[in-house]
Length: 510
Image (cartoon, rainbow, N blue to C red; front, side, top):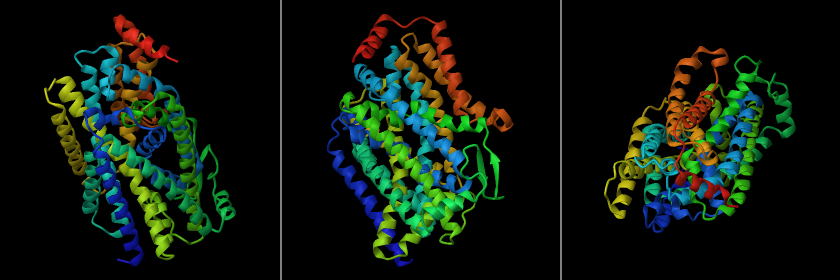
């Protein structure tokens, strides 16, 4: 192995050890199940904002978006950024404060338990269904994160995919199992900082190697449709294709997913004071928009570097390794630059780990708190509940490793499908639970189930037909779930007075 690769590997190893140390430190603060899953509702505004965004921005921030910009220009990636940025801001603006108040008033520490507590569902049917949905979508989602880590080390250093994937999974499981929500949130803050550093290092170094911004822009302008928001550049043929209204709407629909993401919603529930949410919203929204825009610029810069002969042309899925290729070039300039390259690559690792740890906790809480305790009324002590919670984190991690065993599995397809699943099943229910007093448990259940079914129906039956039906499954499933929730709520018995009283009390607070 070359000296530069050894230095990068040591740097990335040091980063992984640092994550473990944080887990050990934070583990001493967990005195209850509420601490383990929600941090005792004592997160500060900065940690709340950055942990939410780090757990949101998985490897697509440092791999997916730059690769998309490199391959097809500004249209698809531009509309994706607009949709995600709008979804981020609106979720913080409308959902965060009400959810923080409501979950405190109903003593809910998980999203599934909130649904049952909100609607007076004493049999916890909503909790059970929501928990099952989380397990169905989060275990493969977690596995996709493990797979991304394995592919990164394999492509960089030639380390066996399975060995790299298992080591990465062990590190994530170790600090998550030990420290719980506080460890996940604190490491997410650190990881968001490393991701930011990585983006700006690559931005500056790449622009310099591409011959400056003028050369980058000139090269992009020479490619048909590259700068357009209504057409895409086709690298394979060197031509452009229209990006029509159906594709635009379908891409913007990614933003709807935020209203149903359990690992993001948990951050709203965990902040120590709802008055600090405004600060968190500003930090999160600005960071998300700037980081995604920089990712798009890096794709453009990478294309300019290819034109200058600094890196080879990257075709198809290889375009997602553009930051990796630039980092490799950076590492050849001496020891200091190899260390910096290691920090950049740790940023890619961080983007994946910060999502996986949050998913592990959300899935674990669904099984231990929502299914075993709330639904099946298992009588266990607080200490035993903590032990069971940690054991389930490990079990879910093992299942994730098994699902990620095939190195040829598509990370993006798994993430896209899971994002749609949560957005359609939880998003409409969450919005109506927080903003519509007349909504009831029957509507919530019908909306949740219909949204989940429609995800599969649209994905595997309607979308393959193409044409106007070739829309990201999140949009039609979200609309169907919302409409059915409203219809069933109006067609069934209105919620009891004590339920509407809590609604009014929560929403009347200034």
